[in-house]
Image (cartoon, rainbow, N blue to C red):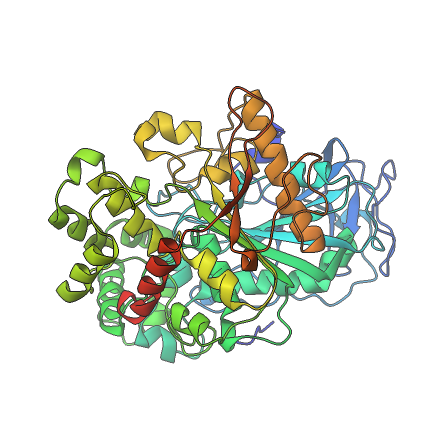
Amino acid sequence: MPTLTGSALLLAALFSCSASANEVRTSSVERASTTDGLFGTLTSKLGPVVNLGYAAYVGNSTLPDVTFYGGIPYIKPPVGNLRFAPPHQLDETPNFLLNNDDVIDARNWGPLCIQQPAVVGIGNEDCVTLNVWTPSNATSQSKLPVYVYIHGGGHYYNSAQGFPANDWVARSGGGLIAVALQYRLGLLGYLSSAEISRNPTSGPNNGLFDQRAALEWIQRHIAAFGGDPTKVTIGGESSGGGSVALHLTAYGGEANPPFRAAVIESPGNDPFYTADHAEQCFGNVTKQVGCDGSLDVVACLRKASIGAIVSAVNNKPSTCKYEPVIDGGYIPDITSKMFAAGNFTKVPILAGHNAQDGSIFIGAPATIVTDTDIINTILKRYPLLSLTTMNAMLVTYPPASATTPWTTQWERAMYAYMESELGCWDYFIGNVSGKPAFNYRWDAPDPNILAARGAYVGAAHTAELFYLYDGTNSGPSASVAQPVFTVFNPAQDALARQAVAWWSSFARTLDPNTFALPGSPTWLVASQGGFMVADLGVNSTVPNSGMALRTDDYPTRCAWWRSIGTELRL
């Protein structure tokens, strides 16, 4: 990584997409600060204040027992000459002259990052912020464990706003601090080319480096909120889970990473681009923006209007995605090779996937009837796979029979798609880490996905997020103004409470059982051959969750996908 240079409803006010941290002018002492550390106590009539030394923020205390601090910058705004640059550290020089007039309003979320597809006026470049939920009685001496969530969305859309963690804090009895971060997305976060790499002021993978910069900011400052920087767990779903995997393999494994444990939900990164393909996508951007003939392409791109950037985001070949690339440093090589060689940071993990994790990606059942249909479905994701490999896949996933978990050609394709990454990496990482690992399979569907796509998709990709984050699985984007929450029915609420207790218990103690809800089944470590099945109760407020043992065919199929990891480019 380049060196840094420099619960179903949350208050509607918290979901203003355009809100930013604005200076508050007040000398009131009506509300006491929640911090009493090195830099002294500042106050605001708007809420509790946390003083970081270089800046002070007032939080939103309207939720019972939880204070929310939103939209806090953790790096310099990546705009102007810092567009396409690695993150630059803020000036965090302590200012002992800060007074109540200097307190910044952090009662709301920061703005969205620019999405894909993009719309002028929705999302900002200056969006790289994080959000903190802390027990209202926490002090700088509390030393609470910290859970940091990295949102998914293919590395090119979504935001932290869809994943409120107030329930995690409240239901833990004030035993946890939660953080959700935003990072540069898509073209602005992951544009790569030889030109980008050789320019001394720019580089690839900046979205990933933003995440790392946030983790390092947390190491420096979370104590002021009541957190313990030695007890940080990172987690994410889909590309957020894929990002967690990349932080585990960073530099081939680190002795002292800025976290002690990881949660990996349905991890998903697209195949790494070849250098030639990255150049083709870069060329499309420079042409769209009008920089293809410039002597200094990076300087030209930095001067481009945001409207030109939006045009480039929206007018690209379908084969071009702007995502993490192998850079020889933070991402040394293909991820599966790094894990297989043991070149990753070994920490306790909680990892799993959804029962039908591939269903929403492969089309309707009527579209997949023949073996050729299955091959074409897989090639859409992995276009570089050879015919020989495709034929081997059909052997690894044989036609439906009494011994296969699939009964139709569509289900056969769904299993193949799912287990190529989303449904096998959790098992793979957990069994090579040498540290305690807790695996799960999520069997409860998201009712919103069922309503939108049809019941055949089952417990589809992102289904668990509906339960973990108050009835939503997506943040605002260019097409959705704000998160939409669905009130749980009793069975959903029961599973949500059980799952949040498990996840937060792991973040607190590295064991999901320690603070599990009474009556929850014991979650055994993966080395004992099993995984937790999380599921709804049948007409009941008691979840139907319990441990299950793996059948031999599943590890065999996962091992086959690992054996072709280089060809997959995963």
